Length: 251
Image (cartoon, rainbow, N blue to C red; front, side, top):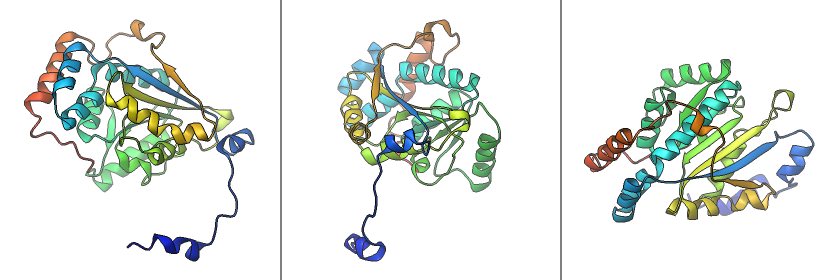
């Protein structure tokens, strides 16, 4: 309504501001470990990435098979620990593809109220749960039980979104349980530029982002998604053959 200038008059000025790390030290926020994981892109995917339109490049980055494998590895690792995991994707097609391939629940704008409540209740009541969620999870859903976030697709360079998503797992945890924030980025793509922009605010708050090139133990885990060249080629063909009908929007 163009009345943003009235906010100060309506609610008054800011009275106090605290640094996130100070709140963490005093136990008001959970301790968070943040990592950016660089995911190489298979050569055929990268060749198409260099020649396609911006829209198709986004989906190729989000559905990078190596990113999917790393996501699968992290999900299994943290589920075995009894953690509750939120996997964020702004791209609904990628969201459905990941969740379906990994046989996990997912929620986005079009999810019905009854199904949504059932999924959220299951997530809250049982340990070792994973929920794939679109950007509606940034502000519309309260899940204090979550202590792990894996970000596979985001809204360009939005620092606000990065802070909101980290905030989802900063509620104090049982027995000083740590929170983990993973941002999966396709290497040598525009995602790296936007990832650097998103992290600016968190770095200014004192958070460290560790850059991870290789995950220990991933080669020892069998049956990860898109683990064969045939599966990778099928995925690429699916993207390219249906590119005019793919749902890229967040509904």
